[in-house]
Amino acid sequence: MPDPLAAVAGWPAVAAVAVVTPAGTAATTGGAERVRPWASVSKLLTALGVLVAVEEGTLGLDEPLGPPGSTVAHLLAHASGLAPDTPEPIASPGSRRIYSNAGFELLGRALAEASGMPFVDYLREAVLDPLGMTATAFAGSPASGAEGPLDDLARLGAELLAPRLLSSATVARATSVAFPHLDGVLPGYGLQSPNDWGLGFEIRSGKDPHWTGRACSPETFGHFGRSGSFLWVDPLAGVACAELADRAWGPWAKRAWPPLSDQVIASFGSGGSRPAPAG
Image 1 (tube, rainbow, N blue to C red):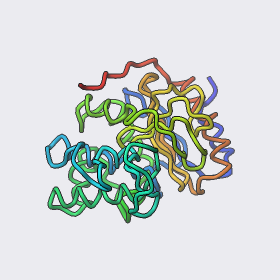
Image 2: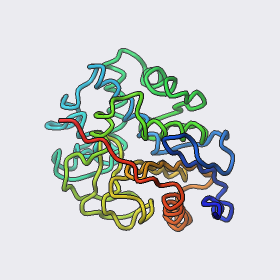
Image 3: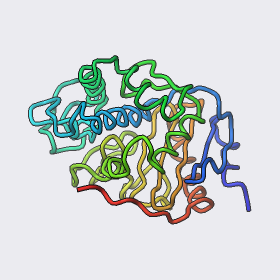
């Protein structure tokens, strides 16, 4: 069988890629230990920290946060109405999907206040250390400040395939569409109708164009970052794919990522089943 990751060597970026299945890491290429910035893939870690706090009772998804009428859940799902990079409302909560870094910065501050710990310390104790992501650290915003190696990003993918940190029900809810039928712009890929999102996790649904492959199921979830990074998890195929690169996202990634994703699904997809959301 041809190497499904062979094409990575021909990319115009130096990249490291890992494929993860429920049995563990199935394939890698590139330097899995080199630390690189994750950019907006960082939001997955922040979302997990918030969800741990929700399960602990430290925060509540329905707790008011942000503009009037907005909640923790609205902020996680980019449905609060906040502007992309400033804490100013530009739409009513629940009316549009506006991708907001400012919303995740607000979540980080709320998590620190509710837990009585600095955000980075809470995330270390609640998420990074339990998952063995010891080489990953936050160097800035809860929206984009994580830096770490591919090995750690693959560990995150493994957790999302087979949850241990959170209950399966919480992960299923977080990776299902929150506040359905909201249109919005997917950064780098234009207006999507709808622009489905979970609680911190982007949902592929029927988006076109998209950074994952056409072979990925509509239930595929994850995030990409402008540093040239991504993590997607296809719960139906039972496979996750993680990537870090030395080149910022751009036309090269638009061309390279979807066919890689299709090859990963073709080579490693198993037709796994997804747990039903709670309640």
